[in-house]
Image (cartoon, rainbow, N blue to C red; front, side):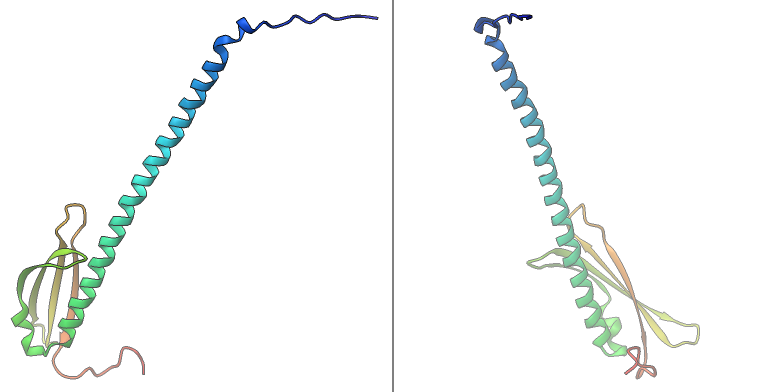
Length: 141
């Protein structure tokens, strides 16, 4: 029969190991928390950017509806730039009207909406207007 003897590990040899394990665990936890905080900040910035883009798109749609509902001869009265401060977004709106003279008899309206924030890009939309009634219904009804 073979007998094995085990050496007893004394407590004096393990004194600093527990503190070292705790410190390594805290470093790993800190790295994980810093990564989570960075992702939270990035998500908040992206959410703000999407909110601004949504507000800008709503403003463009509202301005296009106003221009589309105006009488053809009154379009030139809207030419110019103005700054508007709304609850959603402060922006500058510029409208230019060009008479197309190639015999087609329509006006091209250019609408530029520029948010006042430095990180949001301006957007440009064109609207073609024809004098008189629309001959073709674009909705097919």
